[in-house]
Image 1 (tube, rainbow, N blue to C red):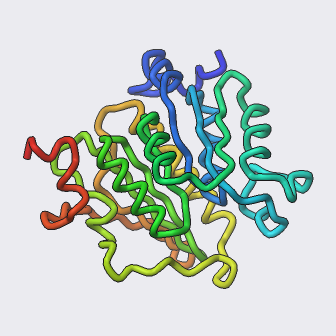
Image 2: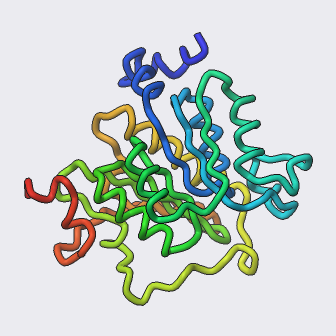
Length: 249
């Protein structure tokens, strides 16, 4: 009965709910995006959520990172997240990963996951996650926001001809994005993009034709517009040409 309001949705049903219950999702980053997305994923009944962040809760987080409250200030984010997510849904498994993952650890976690949700704010980390998801054929949802703008991308590297994050943002010459400490970030924008990331994650896990795949989605709160543009695979990309499906092209 807990999930009846979603299992009646077209394309979901009891088989879809069982698929979610068997799924393992790795959430890398528990800031404004990851905290919102993880709440919805826990509520939806994802069987295992592995949540990774090495930061502690700060007072400046509270306007947008709704996973935490005032009593959590100073606690490791993964510790506070584990407690809150279990309060949301005691029937799922939460695995807290409270430190910066080394390359072998990150690879092990990605290999163990069905889908990776990347909400980090460093390009180097995003490239590592993208590369490992490509290598192991894992689904990837990538979300980011800054100021009053946000964007979302989704990939399924088991599908032939799939573009990857490095097709859109080549690694050479890319610098880390501006930080919200100096440029600010809108809480509702983070909430919107985090919610879209959760929806994209559920859609990819449930299977079928997903509208998120191969599309760059961008939201600008100043204009009130949600824009989308089709991503194309770069034939010269040194990363995605190594997808498990590449040999079928």
